[in-house]
Length: 122
Image (cartoon, rainbow, N blue to C red; front, top):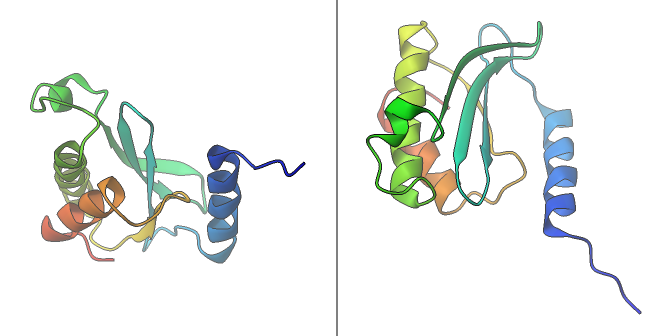
């Protein structure tokens, strides 16, 4: 009998393969994205010292107040604008995009494109 790996295990393995190829630095930190069934999270991380420089998620009260739903493409696009604004306020303009093992499609793509439009370079 063939046993199929869970989708979450496949995603985690993909993410670790991607993380071996790149990491965030002080000059170009990593924009890490995670999505669950209900929410999305974005962090800008400097991996050399292990600090989170900026973060945003749909769980936050001020972000959630602007959204009707927290789990759709529109919410992802809004979160992209929020994380880009917070990064630009801290003087971060260039990042490395870490899609977290998720496919670059739908919500992940919407977040990335909104962050680019708001001024982040990657």
